[in-house]
Image (tube, rainbow, N blue to C red; front, top):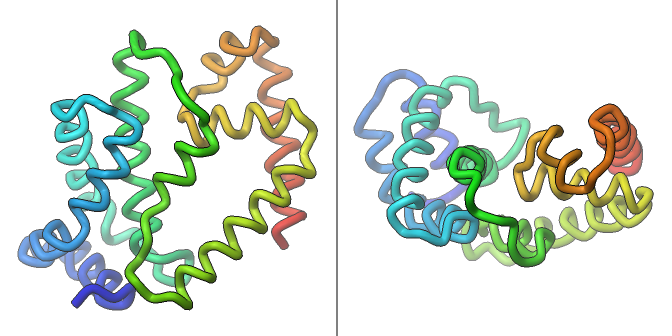
Length: 183
């Protein structure tokens, strides 16, 4: 039981309060989610804390998962990444490091060893990257800082030394352009 459909069923059961389903889901995906978190929070103790918080969020939000809006593993990884970024932001003493694009690409876990699925993910990732390249340099940079590095709008404004309103406009226009490009 490791397919996308099985995980979607487990999430549905979690949404109905089935703690055994949560345990099964944890056993299946915790190592992958922990690897995602470790790339954002290199300290093991912090990564373990973020993983625990991620599974609490998964338990609380499981009823909101919709299979028609994405693969279960992508939904789970998003929650895990968000918890890791939240914890990282709360520390504030850790500087940004490394290439944010590479960090993002490494945090996308494979749903399994299904070559068709992996090819599909690679095609979608390439489509997204092609669309990102069509943005202005400023839009590309702030979108990566917001959605890959997990910075808030004020943190981005401070990081790139630009007015907050300008940053918000770049992100809004960039997301609109991405939406149009991906449709």
